[in-house]
Image 1: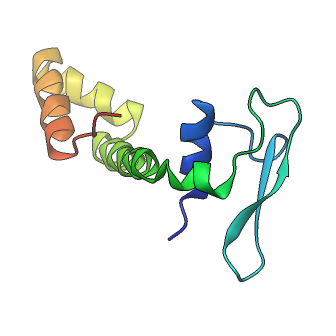
Image 2 (image 1 turned 180 degrees about the vertical axis):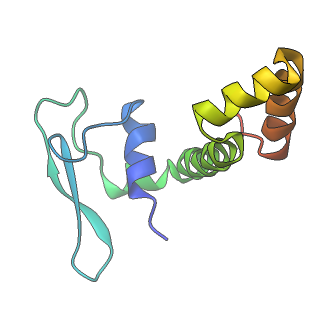
Length: 108
């Protein structure tokens, strides 16, 4: 699985606009950078620079999965408000902490 988007995020230190600033393409040979905007704060990275960011990209990917799992388990804002109303704020905080423990994020 290609995580070039996460490598680019690690390289830039932020998430670029993947429509206006960076465009990725896959012609069947793997994903590559088709367009890199001149307005970005860093020059287009080389393959070697991106490969060096594999570990950071994996951490970003794992953390994105953890956040998605947490959000799914937290439920909607309405569901959380209902939980607080029925069981109280402290019970909600305990529930949130148990979900965070269940789906921990890695240190970046």
